[in-house]
Amino acid sequence: MYTHEIKQAVFTAVSETFEAMIFTQIIPSDLPDIGPTSSELIEANTETPDSDLIESAFDQPVFYRSEINLIEPKSALFSMIFPTDLAISITKNLYGWMEENDPPEHLMQDSLAEIINTVTGKLMTILIDNQSTFTLGLPNLKIMKDLSFEKGEVYSFSTTDNFRFFFIIEGDLLPEE
Image 1 (cartoon, helix red, strand yellow):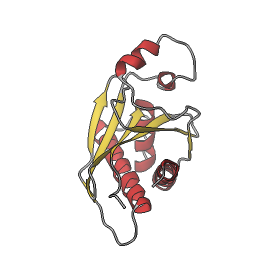
Image 2 (cartoon, rainbow, N blue to C red):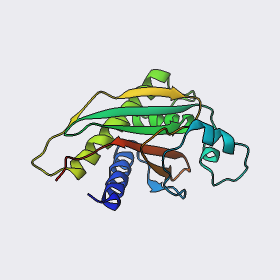
Image 3 (cartoon, rainbow, N blue to C red):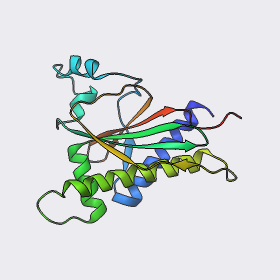
Image 4 (tube, helix red, strand yellow):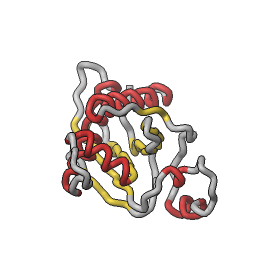
């Protein structure tokens, strides 16, 4: 499978999930796709006031990273990284949260776990043929103080409300043909 086809499949899976579950449209971000990076690289750039840099898209010092493993047909890890404000927005939309205060942490964790599970399921359904099956692990959530990508293929997106987030694939997606 070609890189362009995987990139299109990722966009389709993420956009369909966001539109159906939280009534939010997304677009690929204006940032170029970036390769693996580290928190040291991000920290080195944080003093630059350039609004096109990745870190300038996030105003909060905390990020949520939801992850899920592909167990079969190959081993891979899928992750999504969200700034706090987007995690709150996702939870409010998913639960129809009308109260003035922010939703509790456990609802935010449940929401982000459901998003990564749904996106990954849609992505694998797009990528594999109708005769194949796949197995996913249980979603996991990490709270991060710094934005960092240690490895993997990184795809960046923005919501129409200008929230930026990332989808990351680490490992092989499909069996050899």
